[in-house]
Length: 293
Length: 293
Image (cartoon, rainbow over all chains, first blue to last red; front, side, top):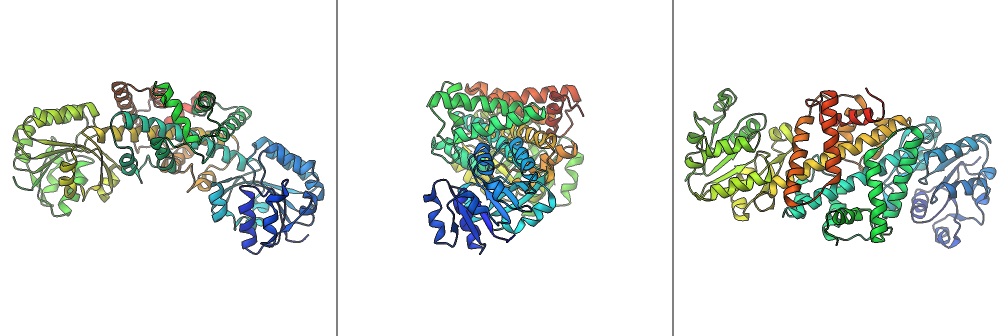
């Protein structure tokens, strides 16, 4: 087994992650379903492969960065990734998928001696380009330690528990973001309708208990009614549905997540808002108050 | 009119604020209902007065830092503050009271030529001691500018709009804090019951979109089930009731504020929780999930 790395999925996130790994001098083989997206990486030193199996053969660490659990399962078990990986290799799945899917993948890979880390990220394309992603990792501690040098060029990796805990943390992250958007929407409406200066309001709160990136960035979008994404509402809704599905499996009720989820459904239906930034939840609050934009 | 300053109310917050003003070399006269609380300020150079009227006579700026709107109104109009202030002087009310009360006080003071700024703060006793309070100011821009040197030793003052806008911003601040606590409670329960490591979870999210002081500080309290205040739940509930009252006056509905307010009511009733830290909202989520502590 060599110490080369393979990366499956060189799209919006996987592309800049590949560039970070190459920039750190790591030998990298890549594959993407749409080959046009991986071709530019060849000039940076990547081996662009014709099949997933070719990319992962002999790699010590295989990274997947795909759209959902179905795409990851397909790559692993239908397109030959799992069978082409050698025993002792590690699959690092950096896609955002359900914790239950991550656990199922890990169990099936273990049958052929392949280790698994679920390692979804927060920070978006900007974080991927800058190598400042927050990487939430679930899996065996020793396997995590052995992968630290792979994570390093991409961001800050933290082991948050056993297999599935990375995806669970990502879901909890998304739950906080959605409810925080709901909170900032209500504060924004209150100050706006009460005659306050919204920009000065956000400035006054900076650094205090109520402050957050959501207040500063999404609050400004609400003030300016500028809902170009950013993070799409359709993706936020998918995340919240995954949060509630996982909560159901665990057996817990999350009333604020449920309330915000229902309002994203209504906003997307009423405003054809799936492609709007997730701060467009503000539109639902305006409609609820008869202040349709 | 001299440029001396008077401060009415030298309690938990007013005491350290007085020390900051004295430390900056400002001539200060103080009065407190419980005289024992203002006596130690004499050693620092304050003129400790026997009546509110004596304290404010001749002062260019009069600061009030009292428990609620009733106490401010009583000091102003029943204990002689308003009638002892000279025309052209400015009342700076740094208490947290209702926006409607602030507007009523300002109108009544204007009848005798006294200017008014509502200037509630965020940052707690620690911020008062360090002179790092966030001060949210409503009122006339020129009056605000003329008061900047008074605010400077206490913290960072931002004018957020006309009279009442400071109190409105404080309420919006408190609404965000309460909903954020609700969000962190649900994320904490999800990660805990799903087998994740809560300390690592918070560490992984640090600096990202979901991060906040509430996540780091109140999330830790929930993990450790340590609800010693901090900010009391009874005060948080009072703030949320004031948010909803003001929203009613303005004519807007705030569903997340309403939901969190109802849960504070239930938590305080069920757990005798008024004196617990406001992060104890977590107890209500546990009870809702049959996981009573």
